[in-house]
Length: 137
Image (cartoon, rainbow, N blue to C red):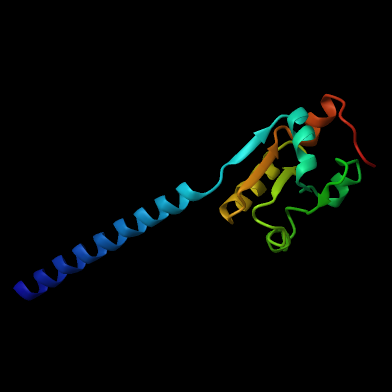
């Protein structure tokens, strides 16, 4: 019985030390991730000429107009991440969608993948249109 109690105690100590080490590693990784920077439409327009603009909407949405020079990369496609990973991780990446939720999620994913300069259009193309910024058709 003493042997069984000692074995259980040793297992608990080993398990708890492994889980706390894992927590420390996860904290370190999350603290090194670049943050996504949210931009209003005017700032997005001014700054995005320095980087790659990714339109993460569907082809049907894009048919209604897009920001000039934007690369079409549908967030809902299974190859979204593999295509996004073709870009240099130190390049400025500017993302937008229809209203901002999808592109914010895409921006967070890219940030987690090691992209260091990730920008997001707050309010998406809807906010862009509301202040009358130019579109390509």
